[in-house]
Length: 358
Image 1: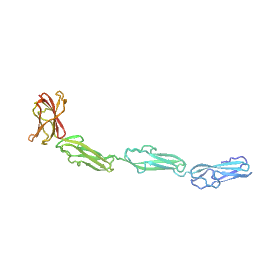
Image 2 (image 1 turned 180 degrees about the horizontal axis):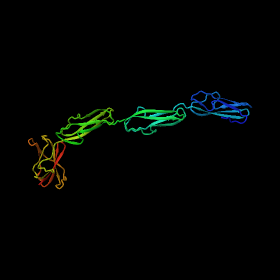
Image 3 (image 1 turned 45 degrees about the horizontal axis):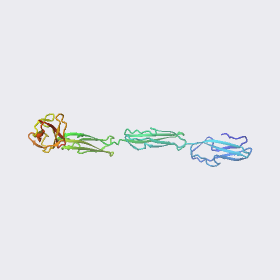
Image 4 (image 1 turned 90 degrees about the vertical axis):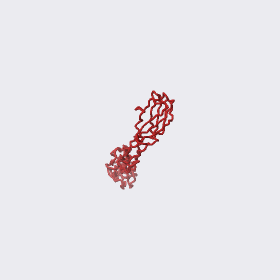
């Protein structure tokens, strides 16, 4: 750069740093310059750093170095050179998410997180990945995937980072119970086997699939309510239990005459015993009925008109006809009334007959 000075001002020569020169970071180079005058004496010759001291080449970039001179008569001169400290260090990438070897659950919320820096000092020109920083990572499919981030600095150095991560399906096993059917009612004497299947939505091996009874074995078909359960465990340590509720009742198909098809007895004799005949497909004992009740009701629409009261019944069984016969007492005072007879069976089912008295 030409000197800036009046006529007869001192002359300045800068030998180091060189104008337009290039230097490597960390180089040890001293400031080397001199000032002279053909018409006077130089009383001051000062550079940005004192003569002989090391220049600062710690950070890349373009810099200037200036020397100022003053002679005995006060004339001044200034000279500046420009030099560049090279950026030889590539940019750095800090990829935090996804991290190499990471495992993420299927459908989980994962945010891409990375940044770029340039230790060489020329500045980051480009920093980008397969997805922008802050975007949501796609975890909708299980498998192994890769992710790449690239960075470039203003010195045109390029850095690339590749990572591999996995998306795994950690959903617990599913269980299908084919038999017994949840909520189903079965009749006593039915031979029913257990059928069920355990599967893993994520493809994990099923290490255990155990039911209350083993697969294809006969279920508990005793009278009453039952719960059948299956527990499945996969190789990922996830466990699922599913249950089916079922009920076993008597093989009751209805009361025989004098009860008609609508479930009613018409013109019964008040004070006479009501004889109810029915079959339960075999001798189930004489304790199949646990309770009898009579409840007054409207003869028009059978709406109850008073609370129910207990009644007496006498049960017998005939093997020759496979019929049970239950004699329920009535009162002579019930002439011209209607009542609902309810029988609570040992299978927890209440069966009723509508009786109109003549």
